[in-house]
Every structure is written in C-alpha cells, then in structure tokens.
Amino acid sequence: MLEGCVDWPQETAERYRKLGLWQGRTLGGELRDWAGRHRDRVALVGGDRRLTYGELDAWVDRLARGLRARGIGRDDRVVVQLPNLVEFVALSFALYRVGALPVHALPAHRRSEVVHLCGHAEAVAYVVADRYHGFDYRPLAGEVKAAVPSLREVFVVGDPGPFTSFEALGAPDGEVAPALEEDGPGAGDVAFFLLSGGTTALPKLIPRTHDDYLYQVRAAAEICAVDRDCVYLAVLPLPFNFTWGCPGVIGVLAAGGAVVLATGTGPEECFELIEREGVTLTSVVPTIAHLWLDGVEWIDRDLSSLRTLQIGSAKLHPEVARRVEPAFGCSLQQVFGMAEGLLCLTREDYDTERTTTVQGSPISPEDELRVVDPQGRQVPPGTAGELLTRGPYTLRGYYRADEHNATAFDEDGFYRTGDLVRLTERGDVVVEGRVKDVIIRGGDKVSATEVERHVGAHERVQQAAVVPVPDPLLGERVCVCVIPEGEPPTLAELKAFLTGRGVADFKLPERLVLMDSFPLTGLGKVDKKRLRARTGGSEG
Ligand code: OOB
View (cartoon, rainbow, N blue to C red):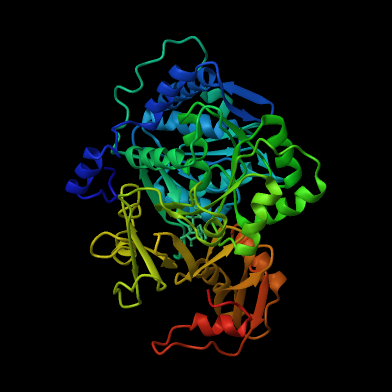
C-alpha cells in the first residue's frame, strides 16, 4: 500500500477475500468490462453531452494516454476540483487506469483548502473548470501553483488561460491503446482519496482502495436493486462518497444503467431532468429534500419514473421523512454514511414507521459496530453512545496522519465516528447527536476547530469558539462566539476576513455572539455544551 496509508491486518484482508467481498478487480479495469457488456447503451448524460459506454471507455483511454505522456502515473496524486461535468467521470477513470490517485476536492473549496490538499498530498497536478457558479478558478490555480512546489501541471476544463487545456490532455483518436492494465494498479492499492468532514483544523484524506470501494458499491447496488434500467441523477457534488458510490455513479455504471449529471440542486432544474431522462434513483441531503417537497406543490413535472429517493448526510426528521413517499410517489431510503466507510441504508421491505424513524442498517454482514460510553465501555442495547466501527470498506487510518490516527481509532482498529447513536433491537442505527466538534450545515460538514483557528487570527479577536445553531432549513448554521480584543469585530468584518484567508463560503459564520468569557469544563477546555445552551443551540 501507498506510503502514509494504513492497511488492514493481513488475516482480516485474507478473510474479506475468502468471503468474496474483495474480488481483486480495479475500477479502471471494471469500466472496460462494463463497456464490453453495454457498449451502445447510454452511460453518461451531462449538459448537452450524451456518451455511450463505448464512447466513455474510449475517452478514458485517450485521457489515460495523455496522462502517461505527461508523466502522470502510479501513485501520483492529482487534486480534482470539478463540478458535475462529464469530464469528472472520464478523468477519474483515466486516473484509476494509470494508477494515479484523484483527491476529491469540493467545488466550493478555496485557497485555504486547496493549498492544504495539494500540499499535504504532494499533488503533481490540479484540475479545475474555468468558471463555475460565477467563480473563476484560474486565478485560484495560479495562487495554488505558486504555493505548492510539487504541482507540475494545472489542467482546465474550458478556457485554460495560462494553463493546459483539459481537451489537449486527451491524445488524438486512432492510436493503438497501450495495454494500460498491464502495469496498472492492483486491487489492494489505493484508488483515490475522499475528504473527511472531520474535526481537525484542516481536512484529512481518506484512502479508498479498489477492492474496498468496489465492494461498498456492489453491496449498496444490490440493496437498491440497481439494474440496467436504472437512471441515476447526480444532484449532490460528484466528489461526495454519497454521490460517487452509495451506489451512486459507480454502482449504476456497473449495472449498465445511465448517469445523469445535474449542475444545480433546485427543484425546477432537477424535476425537469427527472421528467426528461426518466430518472429512477437520486440522492439528496435533507435541506434539498425540503426544497423539493415545496417544489412539488407548484412545479408541474412528471416525476412518476422516480422509484427511490435517498436522503442522508444529515439527520432527517421523522415529520419530514413522512412527507416524502406521498409527495413524490416513490420510496424513501434513509442513508447514514461517511467518507471513511460505514454505510447504513433503510431497506425496501421496511414499513413506513421504520423507514421514517431510523437511519438504516449496515450494508455488509462484516461491518462491525460498537456503541460505547465516554469511558469506551460498550453500552447496553438501545442506549445512546458513540459509534465505533470497522469493516471491509472502512478505513484503518487517514493518509499521513500518524498522530491523529492514534486517537481516531481504538486499539482494535475501530474508527471513532464521533456520532452519537442508538441501535434498535432490529439492528437499525438511530442517530441521536454528535460528540465530534462539527457543524452540519445543509449536509456540508464544517470543522469548528478550523473556523476557530481562522477567526482567532483576527487582530481584534482574543478567543473564538464555534458552535452550531439550529436552523429550520439548513439543520444547523455556524455560530461564532468571540471574546474581543478592544473594539469588537462585526460579523461582516469576520466574514470578509475569512474570505480573504481563502476559506470556502459554506464555512463562514452566520451568527456572531460577543462574550466576556467562555464557560469552561473541569479540565479548562471551552465547554461547548454550555456554550450551545447560551447561544440557543441544541445539545446534539
Ligand atoms: C456523508 O459523509 P461525510 O463524510 O460527509 O459525513 C459523515 C457524517 C457522519 O459521521 C454523520 O455525522 C453525518 O455525516 N451523517 C448523518 C447522516 N448521514 C451522515 N447524520 C445524521 N443522519 C444521517 N443520515 O455525509 C455521507 C456519506 C455517504 C452516504 C451518505 C452520507
């Protein structure tokens, strides 16, 4: 395995192979097989592009040759920051094929996050779109390139400006394809990196192997009964684990279905796509589900093709959950997952009461779940505690993070999720809250520590503490409590300050509470529980 990654213990890996969970295939090789089986079927629809499996496979080969020609290959990290474009899918598979490792940045990330990702991963290349949602990524790319010595190339989808055009990366048609798989990656190798929605000052990288990810996707696709008639609408950003492989894009491609890319999340655009393409499956966060529930009242589109609406990434309240099936005429599937691995789904045969009140059960019989109290002791069934987990597709360590790994996992290799859950008698997970210091804003994860560090750098801030405040639409918003140093800063000033530091918009505080002192725990740390109570926030 790649230096800086933690492999599964050998006997455990052997068991997963013997059980047939890890099948020794690679993502790049799999696409070749899917294309062989479904050559003329539509694989991917995005904007005005419509690609068959055969066309997608050929494009991936051209890109793979282009990458090789530029010396990008085995274990090279490539930070990919693309919106939902067909190029994201083609490039990902091209990188898999040559054994280079995509790092899934989010389109919303800015200098602070991207410089960290490129630097931490020692990326050799960075891929962006020219513009998206009114933001020009080329000046950002210039800053990132200047700051990160390992970066050799920037590829731009669209007008490249001073950089290399993504189009030029695809070598010309008609060349004989080299046997790419021959010296390609192995199934146990890292395939790509997801980002943690974590608790630390900067996002951590999650290595996912070909074996582990293909297993996750296959298990999820089986539960969702994905077949070649499945049409998946990718509404959330492609780099999310939820969209990419739960079963998502990869699961649907593996079955010979079609993937349709949405560029926005609004009900008008998405309902039009659902009607036009006959979408059967899609996945959203609760905030989008809210907007869609309002949308069905006034948008006149035929949504009858929709069979399943997956909702996850943040707690879905039972009252909202109950409205989903009647409003859309499809099944609701609750999804509790994490980029680190463990995926829980509600099943088709659950009754309405169960589907609307639990977050599902693990997709694999080999997923191991432990619910523990603050002392690490297992709690009795039905009692809430922190969820720990390990299994065939859950990481054993973050990339290049020895120190953090020492506390993020227990001595048996269980990952501490930071989620407060309760297990029902039937083995379902119910999410009760969180022990980790993260704000979930409309499904986006914001690390309190990260925002505190930025706000704390302001000259008129003596100390900052970040807590969630409840919000009817977004679930939670970011609230910053500040002990000022002299003239107190305003919220607008703090936001502008953070933007100037290159922080992504979704992390900017939306509420400011000025204080003289913070409540402290017995150990002298800021008592976030009491702070939340003071700012009107919930306990969870
Ligand atoms: C998904 O992945 P991440 O890595 O962005 O965030 C993981 C965290 C979980 O630890 C939990 O705190 C929260 O997001 N979460 C939920 C939830 N699903 C995720 N909290 C309450 N209810 C749910 N249903 O968010 C993710 C990855 C794969 C599939 C779906 C979501």
